[in-house]
Length: 228
Image (cartoon, rainbow, N blue to C red; front, side):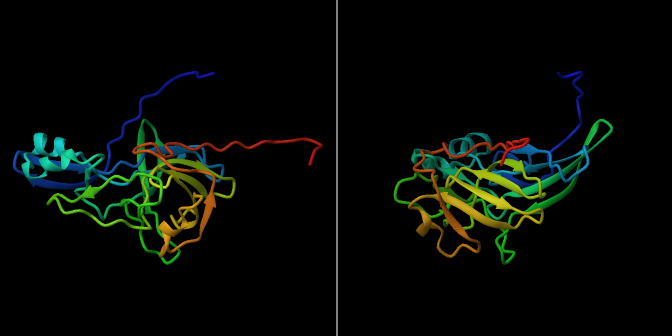
């Protein structure tokens, strides 16, 4: 039963201001696509995971910011503009202090060699659909086997995390340093992740439609007594 609800102050971290024909595009970093608490931390600490990074559909970019050169891309199913394509998914550690949420750390997801993940789509598989992405000039961006659109996070007792992401859809096992230790991907899509700097294992997820990948993940711990 909830005893009370308390409003906590928070604002997303600033990323960049980009001059556009109709004004300034102010970009912030979302770090709370998913939130969880870890049993390895004090009660006032919690963790978040950011999504793939700032993105906007071409029609909105044209109408809100005057980027008329992007208007034609609105005819492409699922097309997205990524103003800062190098800004990829990350873990965030938060602390509640009084009535405020403080950001203690941002840890970029990376492969086993320390190469940061991007927010770019993974290479197309035989079944799944993938959003074509473009930069602000309208140039098509390449796919990336280290790409992820992270959405959900669940903490494990050892302090590591499971992260659910939309592109694969896939599940990432991530340590506290942001290193992806293994990625579970749909059966039959392993070739799409060739060159990835982490182990890739097949899971049961199959084809997905646009914007229909994993959005959340939970962690259920079962305690038994006198059974094995």
